[in-house]
Length: 174
Image (cartoon, rainbow, N blue to C red):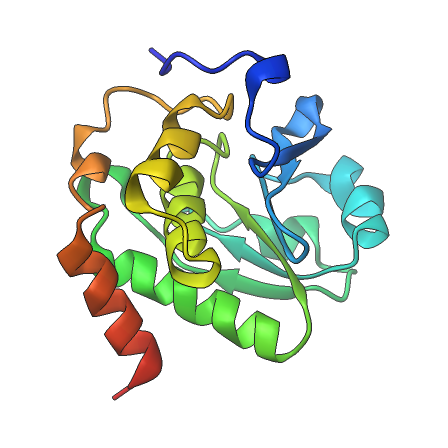
């Protein structure tokens, strides 16, 4: 069961902008995009939007097969949705930071582009765009991305303590 979404016409302007409903493909910011598992049909759109890095959050990594003849930087961070933790989100933030340093646009995806991707985008909003935790979580749940209400554990990640820890780890990598 999915979380209730805010109607498209009432969505805040700073929430993700729909690129393709077919692939749950949204532009989150100038340099970050989100989607469901990409397929070959998405390659022209990814190129058109100048995506450089694709971060796969699924346990299964089929990106190597889908993009074998393409020049994308492929990153695989397998996240178990039932056991997602702040270390997982830190790894995603580290990869976004690297892509930004290399002036590359990023696509984050999981299978549906809803839950693991939603948590990662929410933390991106907090860490890189300085959103309030509540605002980022509201977009994650009500943004129309298909967030599933079963994932109560994801909510518990969004605490000031976890945000501070991730910020510290990004500032002072060991």
